[in-house]
Structures are given as structure tokens and as C-alpha cells.
Length: 210
Image 1 (cartoon, rainbow, N blue to C red):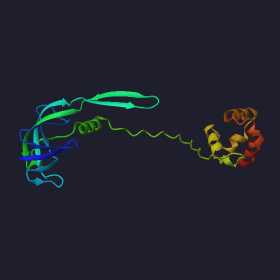
Image 2: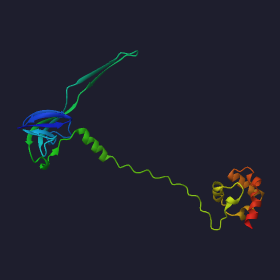
Image 3: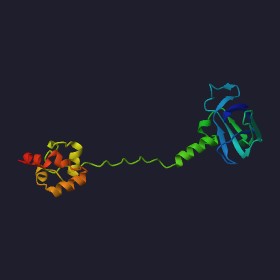
């Protein structure tokens, strides 16, 4: 009885005892493997595969195919030539058994391309990527209980009010009590360059604090 199996994108017609070279499989010499993509067994033709059929084989060795020479020459202003050799990696197997039925229950290792197994192995071995921790956003300091709405002062908006809170200024009474040294110090902290006096914050704060 013969079978037609598919592996490595190619089809092979085989019988028990046949030896063939296929695209490299993830297996070691002496292992028994099972091809499960069977297109035909005897007179049974698959649609496209024959259900529950399989072909078992013993791995003889991992080998390399004949060397193929690839020569490239470019005929341009800056001409170039390149010669490159390549030997395809193959697996040598001996067909031991053809199964018309029951292949799903044998428990024999499936014949899988080495590339496919490598991809799965690398993915499994790679540590799971941890989600990058979100950068903590600096929370604005909470206004103290009894704090005044400093935005009532001329030229003070939410951003400037936040800076004043960060500097420890939260009430009109504080601003109303500023002297020349206090004003100079706050101008320096907030980079105002005389703005406090120009806007008249101290006088405004005295009125608002009443």
C-alpha cells in the first residue's frame, strides 16, 4: 500500500521501507515521527486530507543537501558580481508504517518543520512583556480648608493660583500682609519682575479680605 503525504510544502509518494529526504524536521536521530497531512492512502483520496490517516517514519539523520551556487552579475555603470553557495538543511527518514485509520490515537510525535517549532519555542521562552508603568502625574496640592479663591486677583488664573498654592500662599490675608521684602521674595519665586506691584495685589487682597 502507498500513501501521498505533504511536508515542507512538498508532496511525496511513499511505501513502507522507503527512505526520503524532506525539509528539516524538529526531531533527533532514532525518533519515530508521524506525518498527519495525508493526501491519499491506497485508493482513498482526501478532500483535501484523508481523515484519521497517517504515515509513521523513523528519523535516520539530520543532513544537508547538495551545494547550490547562486551567481549574480549586474551590468550597470558600477557593475558588480556575487557568488553565493547554499546547502539546504534536510531530515533523512525511513517510512515504517502507513495507517489508513487511527492515526489520531497513536500518540506518536507529529512531524513538524523545525522553523515552526523554533518559533513556538522562542515565544514560549521569551518572558512576558510587562506593561510599562504609567508615569505618575504630579497632583496639584490640595487647597487648605478655608483657602480663598485667589483667581479674584487681577491677572491670576488657574495656573498662577496653583503656583501660589505651591508657594504656600492660599488666602487674601497673607497677601494683604506682604511688605516690600515679601513682595520681592515672591517676585523672585514666581519670576514676576515687579508684576505684583503693577497689578496691585496687596491693595486688592486687603479689600477682598474684609
